[in-house]
Image (cartoon, rainbow over all chains, first blue to last red; front, top):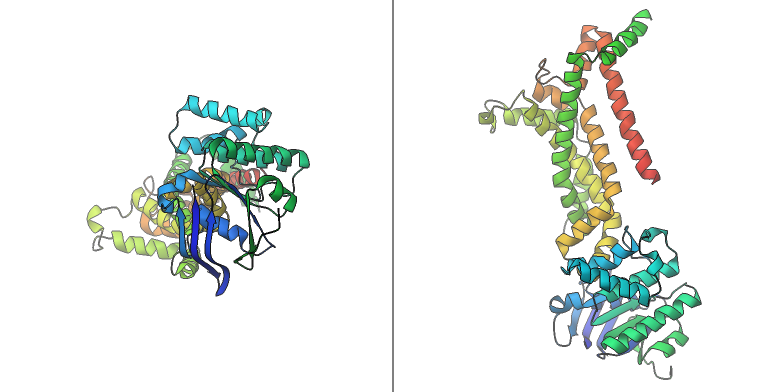
Length: 214
Length: 228
């Protein structure tokens, strides 16, 4: 899924926080978004994810509108985002929303938990697991719906290097296997170099020059 | 001072002996207040969540009006309902005045803004994050509201218990629309008010003790849920 942003403007209380004339996220590629704090990276991702609909301009998803593709896009937040239920129930929730039968839900959830090394957490309450485990569960839940566009807002911020490696491996594997478009916000240049095919620099709400990062 | 001690003794005897008159009053009180709370909660919880997570014009005004309505005096609600249900009133043909149904209507109207306000405030503070999670996973608006109710069920239950507490302890509205008719619309609070004016302290103390036990039980539930 190619995501194209055109003439995008977003303001908070009269202050323009995003002003992007044109930006394209190539289909099947992993694009990293880098930039200082408060540059508008998360706001951009929220707009692409359809969470924030209050903006000027257009966002197209392979020529389609958001309403057509909304169930093919998902986002992983920087912190938390788990529901107050077991890990298994968290992963199965988006599948239940899509009316998928119990056996298929069980199979998909088991495969993903194995893929991310969280099988032993299946029955645990989500609020009783560690930060690193939380991020793996959140990623598993996002991958459960096999999204055509996966948006990640600093998915490895403040977690152990061991967990970071697992999460990065899963992101790359999913991209290779599914050819999904992945956009990842990161503060780590090393992570951007390791994972991304392209890099976009956002500074003061505008797209900057990101050449020279590779 | 003896009459107070005697009052407590007789009150305990009335409760232990399952005095039919006392228990009829207790059962009617619990029935009226729990039905009113259930009606108010069924409407106000989805509505409060929807309002809390939605952005609409005049939302600030809505908040101010709602929070003001939360403390509306019960006698005002009773008066409005009584006028509406009186024989010459717009709903007089229903012949509900001085019936338990009228008391349920009055209490439901009295506690509706309280339950709505508590739910609205909860959803405004915590509902948006849950809705955002639901949205990224493919939930529509209605599924989002259901998700918020499930995620905040403990907090919502506390709100409902608080609402019930307000309903069962009020006296003004049920007195006006129920009329405190013996064996028909007499509830704990109206009985205590009447028994006090008659000087029948043992019965008044017995009912007062029941009301206190209900209040303690409600608080115990709230505290245990908050600790969780």
